[in-house]
Image (tube, one colour):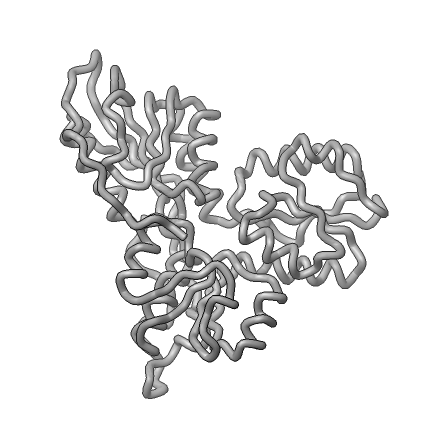
Length: 346
């Protein structure tokens, strides 16, 4: 569980002259995706509907600020459902859970609300379908990540996790004619495709998933930072250390030309030394980051002379998901105005 936020004390960033003009390139899309929005609203509405406490298995989304804010409203985050008092409400996080977790919650008479991102649920269904047809599933992702654990748990006897392109060179399968790849939704698109390429060299009959598993938001944020990175002396990614897509944004920025790139949870983590000689700062945020944290970064940068902000937009996003069925109506049974996940985001 996250350590409560303790603001760091540091002097304001200094406005130190550089050779050229200071500016910020602000990537868009950035921040909240539809699945994160839906999950956070689900916890907020569960608290409104049922009162505190509402329990949440794991972090609802991988962002320390969001988790801390929800804790202040009465959410209690636990590692496993056996920590939840019998009969209580429990929310499953956006990353999804395995059937074993669902069964354990049922055995404890917990009133479960499934806030799994629908795009993750799609991958779960693909795993079930291919396992039913006796395919071996090569799941590209990071072993131990909650999403990977949930997907693998749908068909544990058929799933092998492939952590990296190098690992693709050593994977063994039972029947090379019946093998398919699926992926964690928050990976680097480029690295995933390299892993697939190397798998296909060894298993030419490797099948693709019915549709792209890497989510639209992950791809859009990577495309945007690629465009920003080529012109940036420094890229700042707002996001938490356990957010896979935020960590990938740092890697992508460096790969596509940024001279330096760092991840921060909060604006006060920006180091003055990062700005030495820097004319252009690129700024973006992971898919579980509220926009207020980005605005704090822009405010601090403005104080250091980076007041010229240009938004680099590479896509428009308007996708929204229905909330979990338990939360689509208010206490009187009428359809709630917030039955869709979706609020202002870039």
